[in-house]
Length: 253
Image (cartoon, rainbow, N blue to C red; front, side):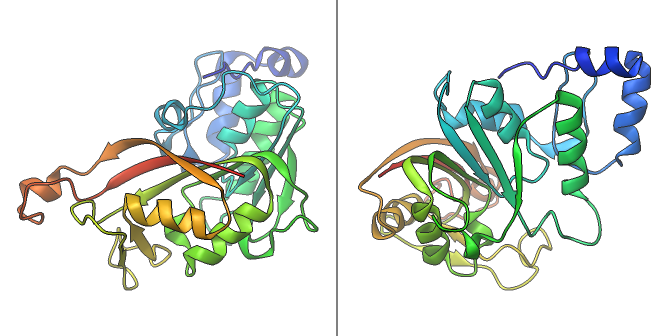
C-alpha cells in the first residue's frame, strides 16, 4: 500500500490536519472505500480497502503500464495504481457514479483526485458499453466487486476481455464453495444484504471456466481472502465446508 500524500494540498490550501478532516467530513459520512491519508485522516469507508489491495497481489511497481479500474467507486484502487507508477490510469463507473442518492461516489472520487493532485482519468460508462473502441485497451484491467452485480456474468467478462491487453484482476463474492462442479447461486431481489443489485454467487471453478469462455488464455486463482464461516457454524453447509466468501483471480490474454 502506497501512502496517499496530502502534504502538498494542505500547504497550498493553508489547511491544518483538523481543517482537512473537516473537508473530508463535508463529503458525507457514507464512503465506500477507506482512504488513510498521510496526515492520519481516514474516511469511514465500509470496504476493507487496504486488506483487499493486499489480496489482489498486484505487481509492486506498474511503471509505464496502463490501467483501467472498472467499477471504480471512490477510486481507491485507481489512485493506488497511480502511486505504483502507472503511466495512465482510467477510473470508470456508471452505476455508483450516477446514482441519485448516497453514497455520491463520483463526488468523493473527484475530491480525492483534487487532494492528491492526481492525473487519473474519469470515464462515466457502463460495463456493457466497454470496448476497445469506447475506452481503449489496457495492460491491466481491474474488475473488483463487479461480477456478482452482473445480470449476465458472461457478457460482463467478455467486455472485460475486450479492454484487457495483458492481465485482468478479478475480485468477487463467491458462493457454493461446498459444490465441486462449476455452479452459481442466483439471488432473487433483496435476498442478499437487502440489495437487489446482487445477482449471482459463482463458485471458484465457475469463475475459472467463465474466464476461459470469455477469451482469456489462462487464469490463476490467487486467494480466497475473506470467508463466511458463520454459514458453516449455523449448519447451512452440511459437510462443514466453507460456503461463501470473496476471492481473487488473475486472468491472462
